[in-house]
Amino acid sequence: MLEATLSGWKNWYSENRSEKYNIAYNIKETIDEDTVLVRLWISQDGKAPKNAKKYSNKVWIKKGVKPANGLVIVNATGESPLLLTTKNSFLLKVNSLTKPYLWRCRNCGQLLKSNSPIIHCSTNARQLAHISQETTNWFNSFIENIQWKYFPHSEISKGQIGVIEDEEINKIANEAGRDLENILNNATLKRPKFIELYNYKTRYLRVSDLKDYKKFQKVIVKIAGWRKSKPKPNRNAPMGMIEIGHAFDELLQQTFNSISSEEWGLGERVWFNCEELGVTVSGTPDISFRGIPIETKTIKMFPSETNDANQQEIFTYKWKTNYSKQVALYLQGSDREWMFLLIISRESGQFTLVPVNDVAINEMRNEWVKWISNEKYATKLDEYKKLIAEEE
Ligand SMILES: [Zn+2]
Image (cartoon, rainbow, N blue to C red; front, side):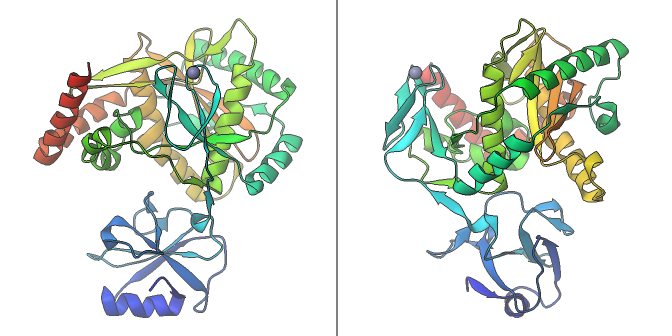
């Protein structure tokens, strides 16, 4: 069964999984017993039927209480959850790409057309997708109305991991923030035409794989296979919030690239040698101010911009599992003790700069030791390392 009313799904769940169940919602539309909901297949559901929609992102924001955006979840203790969404949900919309696919060289920036992945300037080119009409409309209205506004970080950073409270550093943050506000408000913003597509079939472990055990598990069991098989292009591009997020990154990158100022520069690639796992990963912060690296994160809105208490919870969760870890990893690859996180609200154009140190690395190191105490992953990791060694 791929589609049924809510009441139909309740019957299905009690017959197939558990008579005692809960339903958790995180969806904008109003739903009643007769609303038709579409099932989303997750890995625990086994092999998906041909026309089924698959879902491989985070399922819960808060386990058992708050599903990820767009989901209705029927769940019971000890049973796998049933993921549902409405027929109009952004989760069901994909932007199908047509041949020839579009690529961009990561080195020289040239746009390229090809039906299969290509190498340019001896690196793998990034695949691009034209942005959808919906997102185009979103940006047209965004660019027309946007007023960029810097605010000092203490309002939102209090109590978060790794945040530095230092008068001198806050002064630098304020100078950079006001300067950036000025630059952004005077820049001619060009609506992005493309987004970069994320290829989860990576050839190298990435910074993001070291931040999240679930992600690491998924990647490490497959990475040797990906290295041996022929790379394939993406056939679909994301839509909705995910697309807007990517397009926003593109807009910022374009704008940062065009800043001509002695104080501002582009980020420099950093390498981090993870001793616990015996691998090296690399990443590039987006920009720098007076040589201080800055990593940019865009969010839908700041917790301070809304009365919705969940937004605070989401923000703290992202900070702990993503932001503080990314900074900690980047700092290992530099000789600095702290750097800036630039956090931008896509809703309002408000932004702040937060000085963050690498204290999150300690917990990560403990986690990595645990990760490889699992024999399955240790073996897979060795296989990957061997392939890397052969390459060099
Ligand atoms: Zn090139």
